[in-house]
Length: 133
Image (cartoon, rainbow, N blue to C red; front, side):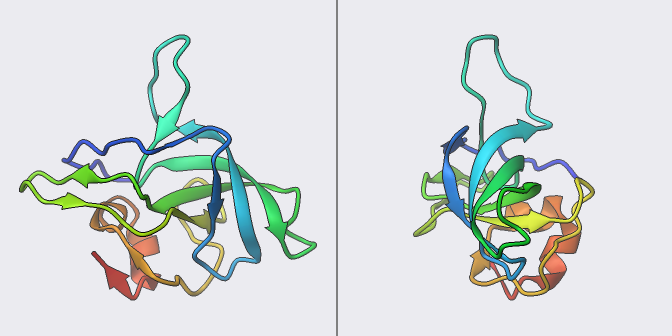
């Protein structure tokens, strides 16, 4: 996982429900926690585009339901600013389910666009993406 130069506005927090944008078998996931993010005591954990999350599958195929999985946030509604001054926001929130915390996606197809910050930080996810904004 590479670092991202821009400071991403964190638009999602724990207990958020996200749809997935891949064909891994999960449809909706609930955020349990965030990995690789430092926090402050007493403050709710939160994350943005490109964050590695731990989530439980709420809806999906019977094999995937009630499983705890790793995922990456691919899109968020809350706008964030890039170093060149451009502000980016998407129409919806979405995540990509991973096989492990190394960054290998579980599905083979990613639907819809993903942020450029995700492509920089997770190159194996970027290989399957059709649109990178």
